[in-house]
Image (tube, rainbow, N blue to C red; front, side, top):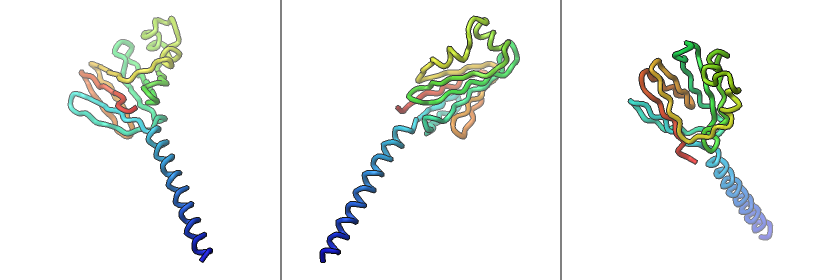
Length: 143
């Protein structure tokens, strides 16, 4: 009889440990998830991302006709911005006065709107959004 009681107590302890572990894992999961909304003229879509996933914005600069790519992550807000382009286009944005990526790295925004008359692409998760002659808004909803 004692062995059976010990077996039940041991089983109950294991279940309790598993439930506690699942509870803490669910908290970690909820804290790691970011909810991001993407709005264009024609659609509005919500994405569930992890805080380490990158969002990418790419377009052709209308003055230099060179490609520009900006990537960032949805940590608490959008941050860790990094731009990639040629030196002439970077100088167009900065007038050659400062390093573009150093300034971008300090940015921390909850809402971004990108507009273009010549076309822009935003990649969020596995989806791509293209627009020409209008705007795309990317916004954090959670947290």
